[in-house]
Amino acid sequence: MGSRYGGLKQMDPMGPNGETVLDYSVFDAVRAGFGRVVFIIREDFSEAFKTGVGERFAGRIQVDYAFQKLEDLPDGFTVPTGRTKPWGTAHAVRAARHLVNEPFAVINADDFYGQDAYVSAARFFQNAPPQNEKAHYALIGYPLINTLSDHGDVNRGICTQAAGGLLEGVEEYVKIQRDEDGVVRGNTLSGARNVVNAGAPVSMNFWGFTACFFEHLEADFIRFLTSHGQGEKSEYYIPTVVDTLIQAGKADCEVLTTTSQWFGVTYPEDKPHVVKSIQKLINSGDYPSPLV
Image (tube, rainbow, N blue to C red; front, side, top):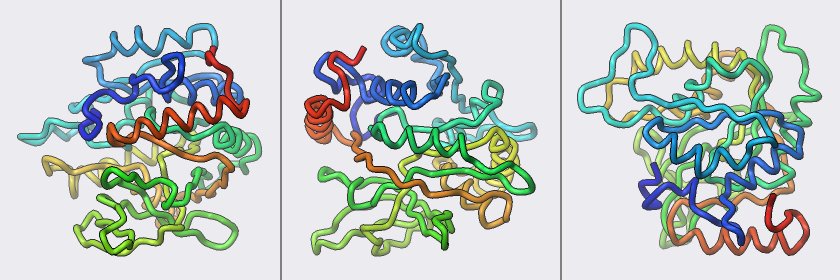
């Protein structure tokens, strides 16, 4: 929706030749070995998106579209009175359940993750252990301090790790920022404002899943709707789903390190930094210009 950005930042040019952040993401995915992209979008601007973004990838990678709809709910559930927005990132991924039957990565369309992040994800899929009684997922982790904005607060899933690099838990924090005293704090979903570890790895919604994730997601979404889904603004986040599966022993999740630098646009004032960062990567030879 881009409420804090003031528009559809996914379609806002950031590269020197009009490239969007999403153009660079798909470029990185293709050269890492991914063969298909599913854009999860709102149906009301699908034609504008297909014309302005999707058609640029024709001939380079298979392109499909899924629509996140407010009324797309499990049987027996209806949209609460007064609710106008869908249920967030996990609900968005669920929209692709009829299209995806293979291992897949999930990204935000407005975040720049870097070439190595896609290589790390592809390597995980190539070397992942067999899916026996427990599913095996992956997360690209970035230090929280490198994902803050100088222009306002951000929302992040803050991770804790067990021995061996596996994800032990992930807790969604909102309104994270460096306060006037220099300390980084954020609000838990229950509303408590806590000090957070600025060096902790965080989820920037770059995940690696196998197709069984949709089965787990459906069962957990029903649980969520039963307990929290009647609120007008309740959100259903991917990190919360993964955390639930880990705690239940149904999945584990490897936190993958990357040499890539994340950057993104939450506020309009973030754009100059993104434009400058992309130009720096072009100058160093990481990306051609024009991109294609």
